[in-house]
Image 1 (cartoon, rainbow, N blue to C red):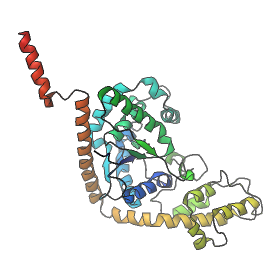
Image 2 (cartoon, rainbow, N blue to C red):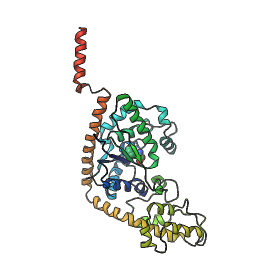
Image 3 (spheres, rainbow, N blue to C red):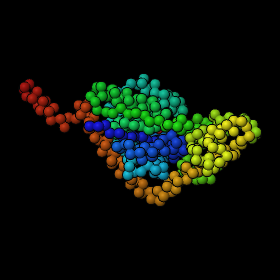
Length: 365
Ligand code: TRP
């Protein structure tokens, strides 16, 4: 049988999605969804994973499940083409995680760079919840339960994919060819790999208050762009300015296209010309920010409009999620039945086993 091409990816529902999520992955997902190149697409909310470091705050996760679903729909993820589901509703994922636990060592988990930085960021020090520590294993289950071949995520997820591939190789080596090794699919625009926060800090994060959300109203986006971090040494318009590390330009790298220039800033043919002028001096931050604002509003307005439409019928959104969970569960159950057979724990389905054992005990009698 020809191997199916299957996409799986997801997000932790710990907050509304922001433009970093959008350029880093959501936009790409929609393109992949509409490319017709994939046999199946699974997009899910990793609420179980979100709980690994929010165990005392279940309400936060519960509230954000619907927010993230709305963000998905607003961006153009289409439930008739992609299965949208919620991790916790698929018990097969816990089962697979349980089996995978035996294939991974504690020291291997301790070396996972993403887990390492996240532990530091959360000041867990020595009181790391076991579930948090082992979430790379559960993430490997998320991916392999659906036999995903392609996982479009940001570069911070690279260690997760590497770990998942190791688990698949180990599983298949011990139990025979059963699971599929997934490939990571990174954003193709390097500015999109990780969009900095509006304050210039490395990452957009809710706790730093430096995000532009997909659901932010237009005037809020405007305000956030107006107060965005640029080049702190670019004091007068006539001063030469730095483009590197200048958040406004990083966002333009991620969002602007040549046609935006003819529309909003026809004095420049493209971003390179704009950058050159900024470097030379004589170009003020306000003008660049106004341009960025126009570009971003053009991209975000249709998303906001679609979100508003879906917000009008919230029960229908939950219903869509419920149906997605049913479809996802069927796919995961199929894989789990193959996994149990490979691991020789499918006792009641294995008539040969029962007959063989019966014969063994008869000769002993
Ligand atoms: N860890 C991912 C994140 O923080 C979310 C996630 C969980 C995920 N399971 C996944 C992403 C499986 C891709 C595939 O964004």
